[in-house]
Image (tube, rainbow, N blue to C red; front, side, top):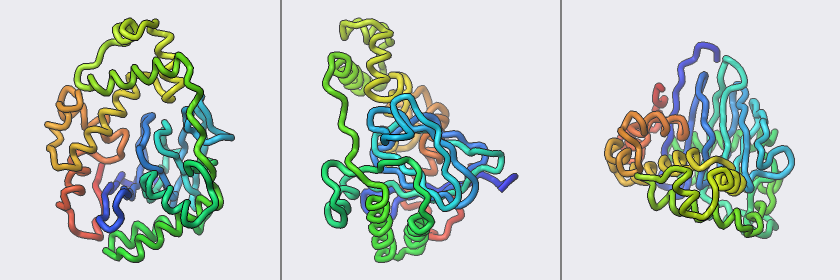
Length: 298
């Protein structure tokens, strides 16, 4: 893949509600630490992806609050639970190519209840699984969606999620005990969300909450796996995605969520979502109706 251009397509297929789809080939791409409200099920077809998983909802074992570097190569799947901070980059100069589905927690819970014996909130227990059969199912979901084959896309998606839960499923880790630090972190998160366009400084936020800047920083990182400023950027991109989903132009979305201008949104959005906001919005509005599109050159 050396010398390959970077291409990506991030879209939704109406017969798969609550599921985002991605096909991408990246060479120099680096995903900064971020989260998803959905699950991440990424099937690697070429190259090797390296990623770190952080935070209290990271899977047990090789990952945890401090972050753990894991590798996923061809035939393997990178699996990330909702609201779990993680990164992503190529292991070598040749980059990596993959297809991914992002099913909602509600859909995964529905599938788990119907096809497994899992109890509690279902999730994945390891961040990487070597399962070429499951990886093929993910690619078949994407291919069926591109071809407009709703029956096949829905069937393959449910088979893939069922297989992964049976082989690598378990209850998601419970949130930490409600300590004073956790309560402070939660209140800080609420204030940052309320004041997204005009957030307070760390010192002002700590003073308002009756603590010190470093104590707030430690509590926030323990609770959410990232410092407040990183969480705020991630939250702004999440909100921008929701605005773009409704057709709001990128320039307006940028101002609404607190970015200084559209280039500022473009930079952070692309580093987290994998495609620029304009391309993301066009797919949501159905501007690209050709099922066989080769993707966006980045």
